[in-house]
Amino acid sequence: MTFQPRMTSRREGITLLEDLRWRRWNGAVADVWHAACSAGARGEYLSKDPRLFVVLERNGPCSDLKLSPNATEVVSGRQEFQLSYIPADMPLWSRTDEDMTIRHLDIHFDVSTLAVRLGEELDAERLATPRLRFSDERIMSLARMIAAECMDPDSHHELYGDGLMVALFIDLMQLGRTPPRKRGALAPWQLKRVTDFIEANCLRNIRLQELAELVELSQSYFSHAFKAATGLAPFQWHQQVRLKKVREMLANDGMTLTEIADAAGFADQAHLTRVFRRALGQTPGAWRRARAS
Image (cartoon, rainbow, N blue to C red; front, side, top):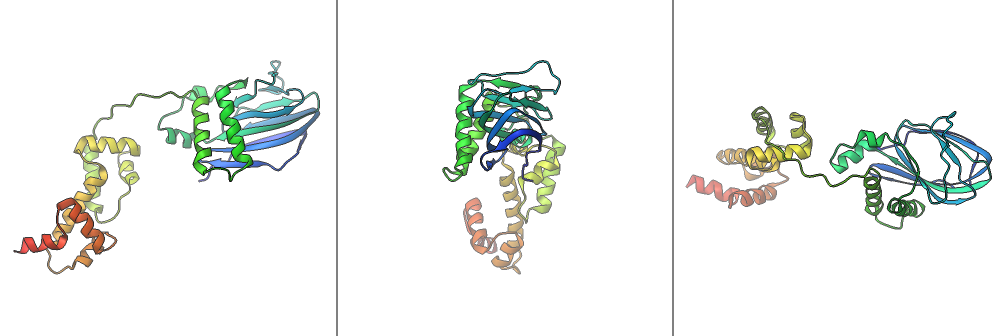
């Protein structure tokens, strides 16, 4: 399902000066707003997803920010403090006492997708901690390049903006390189469940996700654990079992090579021949003739 930012807002005295510019990447949506705020303008914002608010340009004084409508602690800012991280489900109020115009970038993060992409569980406490009006030169540089991609979506390859967004999120969450975890082999019951499944379904393509779900592991962890248990990657094991079935069918002189290729789930006879020769050093026909002689 495509990620959609889940944000509600109420604004008074704020007028958009340009159409919204936005981009979607795998794990985030970024949008650029250009607005005019009259004296006394105010806004109330609530998002179901964490977001980063970035002031790109401002003509006029900074607005005040607070995390509850009646809060006595108000976060006022200077021009150099242009970043604010707002956690999911945390309301934010803003107020401007004088006329101003502002261009800002909002990046809405899809945390579950980013955790999968980064291959690690994200720090829940860090995700839930607000950071209003802070300064970080590297994050700001990345944010400006992301905003440029929103303003001119045809300027670079899709992966360019995607890489910028992931780099910004890593910096924002202060994610460091984690040492690789030592992964053990599958337990005997897990290995039997998986190999029995492969045996029963070897004449069709089997997705790695199917095998991992059988033993309730991530695909990455499962691949390492399976190889630790068998010495082979899952697809190599599957291929060996499939070719064993092919050899059994070759022993049946009543089946042509075309029929065997079709029954074993290969695209055609040529595909079967390539795989068979690569694994066993000879063609299916040669194997059959050698067995008959």
